[in-house]
Amino acid sequence: MRLTRRAWISLLGLIAFTAGSIAGAVTSGGGTIAQAQSASPSIEIGKAHANYVPTLDGKSPIFILLLGSDARPGEPVNGERTDSIHILAINPAKHRASIVGFPRDSYVPIPGHGTNKINTAMFYGGPSLAVQTVEDLTGIKLDYYALTSFVGFQGMINGIGGLTVDVPFSMHDTYSRADFEPGVQTLDGGQALAFARDRHSLPEGDFGRSENQGRLMIASLMQFRKQFGKDPSRVLTWLGAGLRNLTTNVPLDQLLSLAFTASTINPKHVTNVVLPGTIGMAGSSSIVNLTSQATAIFDDLKNDGIVSKKNIPPSPNASILGG
Amino acid sequence: MVWIVPVVLVALGVLGFVLFRGGGASLIPGGPDNTIPDFAFKQGKTSAVAVKEEKKKSVPASAETAAADVKTAMTTLYTEAFLDPANWRDGSYDEVWPVFFDNAMGPAQQDASTLTVGTGGGNTFTRIAQPKGRLNVKVLLNDKDEVATAVAIVKFSAVGTRKDGKLTVFHSTGQYFLRPGDGAWQVYSFDVKRADQVKEPKPTAGPSGSSS
Image 1 (spheres, each protein chain N blue to C red):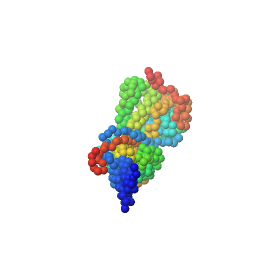
Image 2: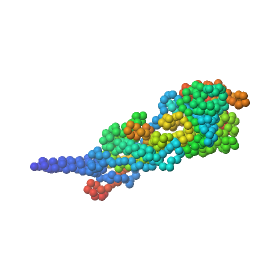
Image 3: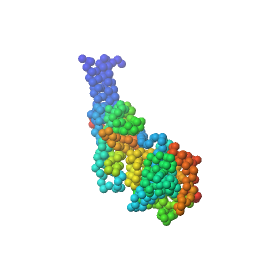
Image 4: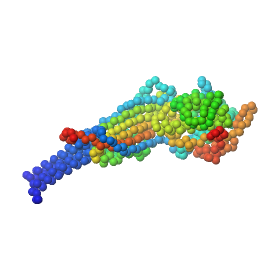
């Protein structure tokens, strides 16, 4: 069939119109459809997660002296003895940490006060003397300290809604009011304090208690990470609970950075040790003489904030652990 | 005069293109005319954690002011990341990044595909509209009751009209940590999830208005 010139022209025009219309419809995808929600089933795509946590990233470890004063309600926190003394060492680059507990009766030089039990440094000169005492003893420059009391400790635990702890063995002690059977349980502030104070149910007394205090810190880390993973804004609740109940020289922004850093540390990568020592006497007082292994731990810790396996002493609670 | 026939038909073709593209949507916000859809996050709850006292009777004014500033920052962020056609068409989000502090800017840029429409927006969408967003703000008050830091907890959605005729519903939920920066609140940490959905459009009236 032969088309006339007019027919060709009309056909070309029709093609142009149709092509233009189709192009418009295709590129818009919207000429003949509703822009509103569809009733048809939807397919989920593009699931993605963007996350950035400003952790500390320096290679140098951070050392914090954690002090628990035995001040009772109404007593000043500063002028009392510290029956809980730990160095918390954090290695941000390696996402590891160490908790090193000091027996409260460790007989050490107190600057300006001769040789005495380490827990008296706080009594003589407040946190600054406690820091100086530990620095001189260990050769480690402490970056910060944090001090709490019985009331403060309970307030912190209650402030985070209780603490879930895997109690490793039976603990029944009328002095501290510890009354626990082994197993995972959530402790309120009073129960956590009892857990932290109990030394009478433990074979090595204060040594085992110091380890248990480290155990609470690891339980805190575990709980914090869990909550932070689900709801990062929970960090504010933790910081609020901490700062309301602590005396510390950690600036707020640094505390936030430390909390972010903590969120990257697996509790399995936290070493909890108590300095080994032998029981002795100084006059009529029972004291602890730290052994040379304690010095080895200090030297080890100083480098990177990590206690090497070879320097980890046996648990003071070893005889009742797992039994 | 026969030449007039193809001219008229071609003109009709052009008219058809214009009519059918976006269903005559060229004046719709987020459409081809680069109009940015109106959007602002709905302010939800503002809560404060204080370091002085455990429970405050009411949220202090400093927290409310901070929450308003955070809302402004978040509205800017999501407008530039999802709604400004000049950004998503080119896959260039230069206006987004200043909302982040220097420390977080690089990581945010690396996560651009999650935090924004992404680089392929211009090839995929003809327009993005119907933004909805709700924001709760939690603040930490220092010992002077000043806001030390704030967390914006956001839920955002918008609908992208795709060139293949389908719709993409953008869903972005997450948390942004902010503190006052250079003249505005800026983000220094974030945790954001995207779970977009593709939907078949519901057939409705064509351009003539007739129902199908």
